[in-house]
Length: 353
Image (cartoon, rainbow, N blue to C red; front, side):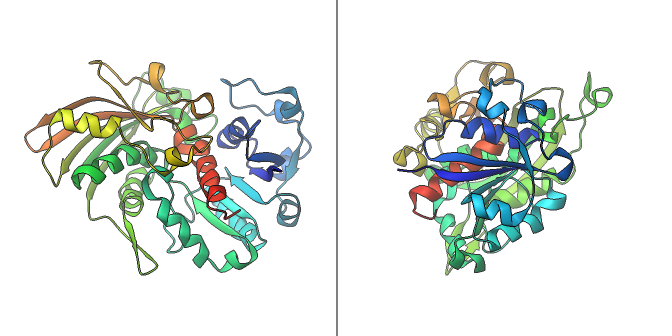
């Protein structure tokens, strides 16, 4: 079967190049074009590299950057993976969808719209059907978004907990890597030897997005989950990997052993469908006293294509009616490009592409 031609938007940025990394030799998708702003037009991808921990093939490095022009992208590609900055992503993605392109976006612009899925396939696969309500769907175009990187990090284990015990309350404190700010990240004089206790709009995004992701569909509309979410977000001097301290209260009581079993045994639609980028174990529980740590655990996930897609949980404990745990995820893979690629794999499996 022929592979689906895809475009990478924002190909000179960190997320854009993570897309290229994950799409290289992909079994479903083939890169049909790399796109960025006018100032990058004609450059080799190899001359713009931001991703330092992956060795790209020479054929990929020699690909030339093209200018972001909607008709050209729509002519050459069925799917677009968007790593565009939010100041241009919103209208450009809408124009692409209106031209019959299926857009899988990392940007925040469309996440909370009433007919746009905020999709994490392990959490809310039924939400994907909402693309059929988008006006552009009749011509083949639609928009699917993935969540903020810090939201994604805890959404999968929270889904496991909610499915087994019900969720009433979540308090999350994040320790977020500098790569979450894009390339080149946070200025070194601001972050080295320091912690910055503010990330613009991050806490509000987490609190709103988790309610939508963990929620349901009723009469063709999204219904938010009633869980109360409190978030506090800080930037720390770590390259990749968001660590989050999570305290939660469940509707039904459980023991620590039951909680660990629920997390470690969790599987969902991507695992049943054996999607290429889906980790065999979406939640990995570490029992060591000092894990997870970014340096050891940020690239968790099997098989090889799913490296960085696993969410790692550790220090699961209970005090009174509350459970406490630490959660680690790769912010530019699971919480970025990998999340969008997995969304597109699911859409393809559901015959939407």
